[in-house]
Structure formats: C-alpha cells, structure tokens
Image (cartoon, rainbow, N blue to C red; front, side, top):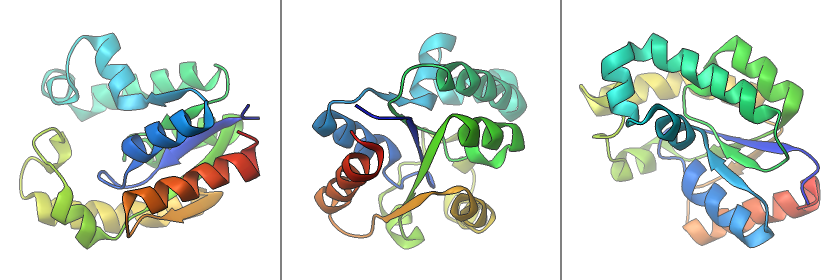
Length: 171
C-alpha cells in the first residue's frame, strides 16, 4: 500500500495517464486522472469546459478538484500539464504527496501528440507546445521529488515508475 499520494506531472503527452494507469494496475493502487475526474463531474469534456468557462474557470475547477482529491486515500493521480503552475496547487501537491516528473523529450511529444482534445494547443500547436515546454519544465523540475525519463519504450518507463512506487513509496 502506498504511504502517500503520488502526483504525476509533466507536459501533455509525457505519459502521465497511460504510464500512471499501468503502474497503478501493476502495483494494485488506485489511479485517477485529474482532467478525467473534472470532466466527469462537470458532465462535459475539457475542451467544452474551456469553451464555456474559459481557462480561468477551468483552473478554478482544477484547484477545487485537487484540494478535494488530495484529502482522499493514497494513490496515483495524474495531473494536467498546467496544474503544477498554480502556486496554490503547488502547496496542495507538496502538502499531501510526493511528485514524480515524467520527462519526455519535446520532439517525441510533438511526434505523438493529438492536439484536438487539448484546448491550449488549438492554434499553432507546435509553436505553442514549445512555448509551454520552455515555461513549464523549470517549474516541474523544481517541484519533482523523482524524475523518470520517458524517452524510449513505454514498457521501460512503466517499469521504472513501478519500481519507484514499490521501492520509494511502498506500493
């Protein structure tokens, strides 16, 4: 059993949801994707939330959801790419868990990323992703307790995450 919540952070397309889901399944711990949880509770997709409430409204929902979920039992929570950028969210994350950064090279992300479900990448996705990468990665690195490089096979990165969960957090 995990001894705390493990927050997965990283750029969109870094593998937070897919690797987190796989590692949680292999270690028998609960998994939750913050964006999916918000969308389910709102009864609309993330792009629909952005269209209706704009980014500011979505970010409020995100902080409220994070505060609520942080008080639940330990598990793995995949955060949206922008979640760790809010200082309030950083305090919640730091206060309730540990942070694992999934660090995937930008060029690999750009080669694989589907932008149609990502509102912040709607226009000029490659340029915008490069801007977000430059803005976010320094903050991610400062916040991370552990960094896992996801630059090869999915199975390799998943195995590394499983090992971290078992060895460091007692999953």
